[in-house]
Length: 268
Image (cartoon, rainbow, N blue to C red; front, side, top):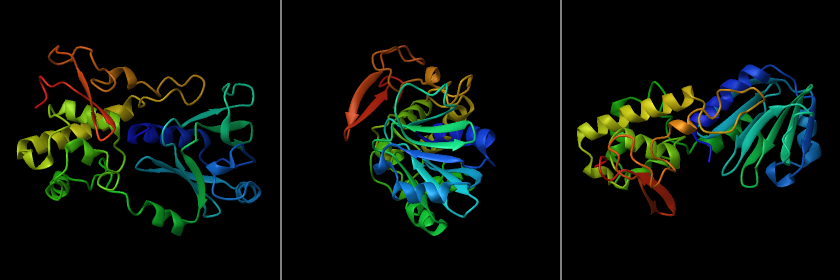
């Protein structure tokens, strides 16, 4: 599932490529992906200018000149492709938005959604989300306050969007590895030093993942940035491979139906 770095990478690239553009056509292949009848959805989008592409947690927000906002959550398996009618991918897009000859394809939205909402509805929808881990206001002091209220397993907390917004399975494991802490530790057992390492690792890993474009497939032809972090993952989805820090095999386990990857030799 795309997480904060993947959606932030999308945000930056889409703002650059189609920010300020006008929606000239809409095609809805799967009605359940949207929240309005297709005709009304198309009417409200037609000739509407995209003023800003923003992000909150794992969501993308397409702000429109009309005051409406398209709220996207890719969920599991969703991804975007920006191209033309000629270079489109050989798979069905649930929704397609045209910006002249440039087409934005929304793929894999069997579980995800693209909802057209008012600003009031957006605020209500996103209100339950926790703080952004890379927000300058999210200081170490604020992090320790969050930790003080938690008694759960570390990974369970990190992927809880109501506690922190944007971290999922992959980056929870990567952050814990970087901090040399097992993701299966319970939060009350973390020392102050370990809390400091965890906070630093969160900032470092997420920033690096954004810098290298996350782990998604390319957004458009010639996109050499998106997906660059995939080969830089240290433990996630690398069960049985040698740990890059100590050489011992990375272990794969399961926690509340979630995969967990860690080195039980150098993470404590």
